[in-house]
Amino acid sequence: MIINIVSYICIGVGIVFWFWGTFPLIGDRSVLFKLHSLSVADTLGSMSIIVGLLLKIPQEWPLLIFALISLAIWNTVLGYVLAYCSSSGGKNE
Image 1 (cartoon, rainbow, N blue to C red):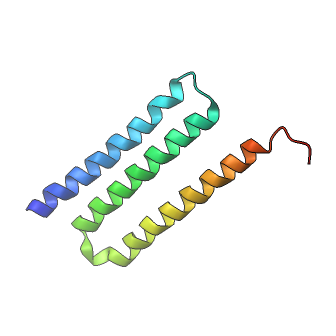
Image 2 (cartoon, helix red, strand yellow):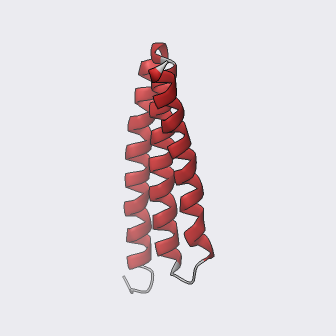
């Protein structure tokens, strides 16, 4: 019973992070700031949802742990690629 409640709280927090990450998109900041805030909130939200699912269906732990690791690696690498592309945009190489 308590695990179900914690699971639903994790899933709810993940959904809140998803929506929270979309609010900076309507601001006046730079595109890179918008992408950064969106990707961080999306990553945290997705990880929170996966943790909630891990509590809800523990028999699928290998797949869910793989999803957590993949999210962490993918979003970290994507952040570095975006930063590299934005920093070398105006330089002559």
